Image (cartoon, rainbow, N blue to C red; front, side, top):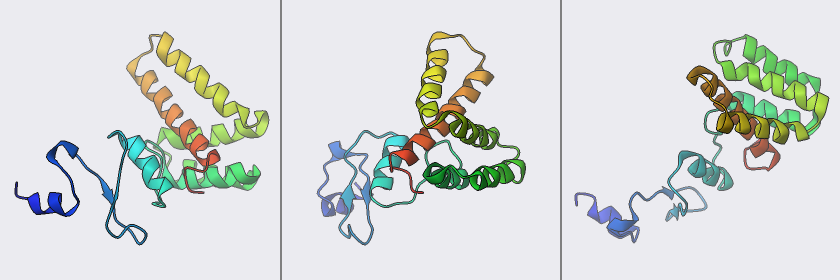
Length: 157
């Protein structure tokens, strides 16, 4: 009840909670988030409304390089990703995944993303894998999702 004035100001009822509102230049009175309360869904909604957000479970700097890479498939973007992966991101296993995915896309084309996602999803659903391996495969799926979001225009380039 201590924040009842805020609830009234934005025309919310207690059953609406939790409620998320975006305030920016275009939405001075607040734009209400209409979807399911999941971090990934909220992040997509924020990106669609012009908020620069990385995909959940990925690396923002490498997401940006991935966007540039997908635009022209230039070797310079793979080199930039490799530099980060071998530099200050060397302890993050996802960094090396970006480089490998870019190399595979150059070799096999954009269809690699869907094929690899399908393969990893099948392994995770049908196989009994150790927790460490499951975590690694999930990280790779997150990175593949970031590439797909860039291709769909939902993740800023």
